[in-house]
Amino acid sequence: MIQKLKVLITNLGIASIMLVPALAPATVYAQPDPTRSLCGGANNLQFGATGDCAETGEAQETVNNLVTTIINIFSVIVGIVAVIMIIFGGFKYITSGGDSGNISG
Image (cartoon, rainbow, N blue to C red; front, side, top):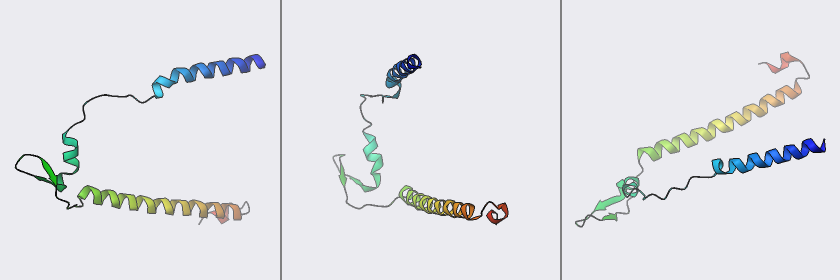
């Protein structure tokens, strides 16, 4: 029994050591895309005569932000309803007293 436990612990140790490189995040030292920041705030930028971007200070809500907000609110509502239904179903199951007719409907 002790021998099997030693073998199991040894195998788990070796497996975990072998999995460390597979689970470690890959680091990439590449140059970031310079247009990424421009695309993210394209609605808030004003091009000057020098070609530099200056912030206008006017934040505009884009369609993406609106859709994201709507989806997040809908997800919260659906999650709350799901939790309430699970609690209600569990309550009906517990109070049914083993009678399957009391659970349905």
